[in-house]
Amino acid sequence: MTEVDLSCFKIQNNWARRQVKEEEDIYRNCFSRDRDRILYSKGFRRLSGKTQVFVAGFDDHCRTRLTHTMEVAQIATTISKNLGLNVDLTEAIAFGHDVGHTPFGHRGEQFLNLLMNGCYHVHGLNINLPDRERGFKHNWQSLRVISSLEKHDRKFDSGGINLTNFTSWGILNHTNTLYKKCRFVLYEKSSDGLCKYNCGYMNKKVSCPLKGEYSIEFYKEQYKDKLNDSEDWSYEAFVVAIADEIAQRHHDIEDGIEANILKKDSLINKIVDLFKDFLNEGEKRLIEKINDEDEKQYYIPLLSRFIVRFLVSRLIENVKNNLYQLKIEKNIQDSHDFKRIRNELNVEEERKRINYCDAISKADKQFKDYLFEMIINSYLAQKMDGKSDFLLRQLTKAYATNPQQLPDRTIIALFKNLNIRLEKYHKKDDVLKMLKDNNIEEKELKEVEPGLLRITLKKLHKSQLEEYRFALLRTICDYIAGMTDQYAIDQYESLYGSQIWR
Image 1 (cartoon, one colour):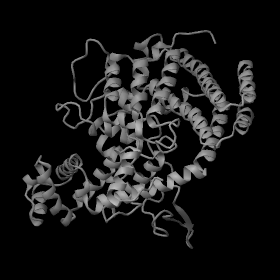
Image 2 (cartoon, rainbow, N blue to C red):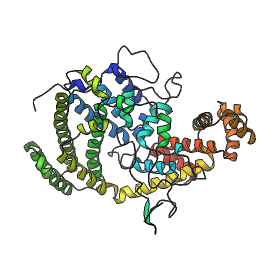
Image 3 (cartoon, rainbow, N blue to C red):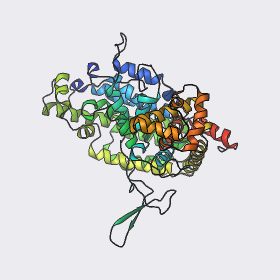
């Protein structure tokens, strides 16, 4: 299509808001500041030691969460520039989108979600969890990291780094905010024709109280007032979401070949079979060049170049058409017109504009499924996943049984989590009575000295007060979620004294 100006759809810097108002920086706009705060955060630095597909350290050439994040930012920036969108906002979302991810990739995320939904029982902490305490999901945890767990300035009462609404919304919405049905749940028709839901994970044949539906109510309860879908969405956020998918395609290919899971010839045959109707002459010549190249060090970069260029170019072409149609339909001439109608638009319908045409979307979905089946089901990935699951279960048991093994800063976080729950969900007199019954004074919960808190922790652990159990469980979850792969392995070996990763 003829080039048209689509910059009217760009989020303007002066539309942004923060939870706590701050003076503007004279050198950087608000989204540049968001990006920089994320870059300097502990959560971002730890991404260098976290799994993308294969455990960090398995092979120096395989991706970590950090290298994946940088590739997402590069792809998203290219797309945003060509669409006339806000590149600073795009970068900020891209750099922050995975700061809440777990060690050991999605296997770590799966374990913590099962733990926080009561599917994996540990020392009685998560039996009969109320819905307000349930759930773990990495994009929600990324929001928690930037809103609560990272520390930046004392004036941010609830913690966090006080990012703008647009950056925070984009980080949360880079992937689905809800889970699909539990893959472990077992369905069984009873004699009266009703469907019974049983656990197929650790609690075999036990009735599933959630009926196979995971809850993420903890995050909704904590952060429900921070974001507003109709006001805080952006096309920049949707660009990062699809750039995340494109980055996964190309580095799954590279890492799969490096690990000898994928073979070049089979991969090329699959690509041609799925995308042959959409290839231009230059792309066909590039595939021929890949076919003719025998050395891995040369054909891997060619494969990456092909898949990224192909997907990015087809995306930009289709999105330009989609946004142009919206511009004509709504008579949008500038950013003022766009701002005026933004809240009237259906967010999920607008998300669909940032996509390929239907035919390429279908082919890409098949390609994604193919890579998933080949890599995730491989002997190497399954062996790593099995070890990861075992290691995380053992760490959780250790901390749940004896929380004195947690570091001082995590003990402090535990008491903060406990105090929040006592103040939010109980009357003052009821709290004082609960504490008195267990020989605990209120002031003991407010100490700042870790040594004194540990003395009180001993009493609390013996009491097993309900809110203490919930606070301890979430604290363990936050602590494990923040670990790098190697730190988790080191903690396991320091607790159990055996070398698991050999």
